[in-house]
Structures are given as structure tokens and as C-alpha cells.
Length: 175
Image 1 (cartoon, rainbow, N blue to C red):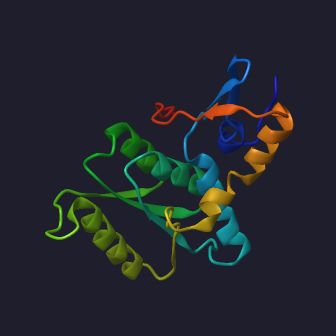
Image 2 (cartoon, rainbow, N blue to C red; image 1 turned 90 degrees about the vertical axis):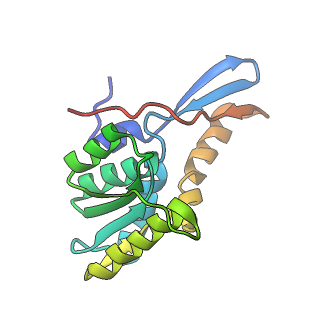
């Protein structure tokens, strides 16, 4: 049995499950933890995130949870802006990890609930002395987080394969 130094170290690597000769499932224990860790660690390396920085993001679930785990382990403050689609258990986990969660309930006339979340996020950014928005959809460190994993897969499988990566798994709850 392997002993891990942290929750994220134990949870960030997916399981590779062989179904058939050329068919595998890549199953993550905690979806979006790998990119959240990568984005925040790269921001720390580049000086964009320091111990005084508040990490901010708008997300309705898995990425928010990944940010929460990463920030909690790194000792960083974080704020998440979401909407009523966020599972109450995920919201509770974020709060238990020390996060501040703001739930937007009313859509904006133009752009709907997504624009309302972004507007609230901009307010949060403005209210902080120093913040870092992970900006999950536009941050190149999101996709780069999977580079090492892709290399590992290529090395492990050494063949052309069909890879299925399931999403929407339950978030493990930590009491």
C-alpha cells in the first residue's frame, strides 16, 4: 500500500481500466483536480499567486472543488462564484475547506446566469487587494495539466487505443 503526502497526491492520478483488447477507461477520482493544481502551481511559480493572493473562479461544480482542494492544501484563500446548479454538498465541502462561496440566483437580461456569475466574479476581483482568477476556459495551464498524463498513457499502452474519459462522477465527501 502506498502512503501519500496529501489528499490531492492520492486523488489526482486517474485509474486506467482495461475493458477489451483496445478499449480503456480513464477514471478520475476527483475530476478537475489535476488542472486546478497545475494552474495554481504555475501561477505560484510565475509570481502571480503569493500567500496573500485570493484565488477566484466561477464554476458550478468539479472545477470549483479542484480549486478548493488545491487552495486548502497550499494554504491559500479562495472564493468561488456559482449558481443554483451547484450541488449543496459541493458547496458545503468548499466552505469546509475554508472557501467563500457566492451563489448567484438571478440571470442577467443579456447573457443569462453565466453573465450574472461573471459580473459577480468581477465584483469579487475588484474587492480584493490581490486576486488570481484561474480562468479555467482560457488558461493554457488547464490543458497542459494533462500533458504528463498523456505521455504516461502513451508509454504505458504503447499502442493505438480508444480512450474513454467519464465525467460527472460523484465528488468524494470528506467529513
